[in-house]
Image (cartoon, rainbow, N blue to C red; front, side, top):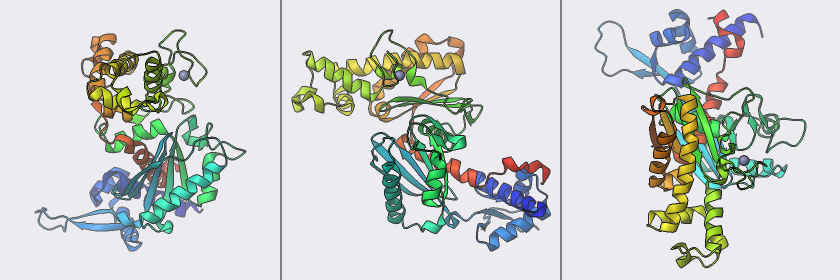
Length: 404
Ligand SMILES: [Zn+2]
């Protein structure tokens, strides 16, 4: 690429990114935001408008005389992003336009997660069906963001646990298959991104997103940015030991927090205790112990079943003590509890909170708030979609300061 073309490409991307991040802006705002001079901003906007990528918005309430006031924004319908959050039980799909409007939001029974080549075909089938259901043209799909559990190095597009079957990274394989830009993200970091852009973390700087679902995970936001750690693996909160010589965890260690505070552990503990003869409302409708799951325990607890309440409270006590460590380490302003377990059991939040406060230092916990995620299970798909949208207009690696 010639130097002039590269320069124009960078300026163009800087403007597109500013509009993607901020919605409507005036040309002066764009100048301030990008550092590009006003005449060049005007010229680029005119060319983007010709391509139908940017549209002019009339400002209704402007009373300044003289200058014709106008704002510009991205043409939302110029392109779409698909965010996919593959969970152990469900997969969430979000289609977003360039103005962050959600065109499609659907949750399906998950594809079977195992590190098998058939995963790609299963995923392709689901994606094609969602895109056709949303009536979005495949050509207008700018890219696909995919959040996956397990060990993921998003920056280099590598997923070690799933989609790991050969020389090529998950990103490379999926880009070839779909012929689209693909971004791979760890599901918990995707959740944190979703909360940061669209959820409770929007106006906060230091936030911990604790997901209590099938497993137990943590997304970390520090100084307004999602924290990945050196290799992208930061946040394996579920695998700190809390019960010496406790239950064997699937990670190979014993007594991990996840073995006492997750829907999997709630299911296991309930079944074990019932098998030993405990009495509970759960037996009124389920004669087969193996049919009992965490969702039923949560429902029974909400209906006052003492057996179930005790199991949920135990999970909350361990989790609260674990969160106390995090408060002492990170001094957050906000803790967002996500995942099926937290949303189904409001009283669990109280147990978590009181134990987190009890075990952390007062100077560090006095301003911390606890909330249940409003985005719920959409956070991950939203997060990976916005990451991808911003990445399409990425200019950092081209050293924009040399060109503006
Ligand atoms: Zn573990």
